Image 1 (cartoon, rainbow, N blue to C red):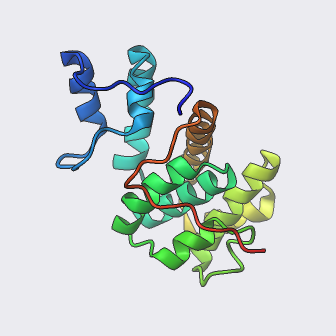
Image 2 (image 1 turned 120 degrees about the vertical axis):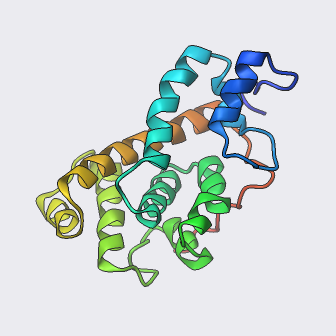
Amino acid sequence: MSRIEPLTPPYTADIDRALRRWMPPGVPHEPLALFRVLHCNPELASRMFALGAGLLGHGLLPAMGREIVIARVTARSACAYEWGVHAATLAPQAGLGPGLLRATAQPDAVGCAPWSPRHAALLLAADELNDTAQLTQPAWDALRTYYEEAQVLELLVLIGWYRTISLLANGLLLEEEPWGARFPEVTP
């Protein structure tokens, strides 16, 4: 049970409008529990919407790279909730198949799947930032081989944003969405 209960219908007109903005058109399920909890504080939700929507809908990183990073950051943060939401929806739409998705949850994600060098650079950067809150020069150089400066800036924000989202979902003890993908078993 979530530490803060998600809002449930019927919503006020303002909350209903806001929640519909957060969800893609035509989605066949309730707005995410995370969104419904955030709307217990509508001002905070409104401030968070701009960055989250911007990263997902208007970013400079290719969709597959973005979803690889989100999967890795949420996996490294032990956030089955957010990992499962993306693994069930946005990751497959971006071309990230089940085998690569499972690999993002493994301790050695780079070593257990056939990643392209550009995607391996993303994973290694996410891991370094997760482990040390720093990015070494070799990791930076690898990123710059494949990504423009503006894309690398966005990548750093994306990693921090999904670390924040993971901490939020974990701190709230959000239960996984019933339609979300299940977090894979970690293999040594």
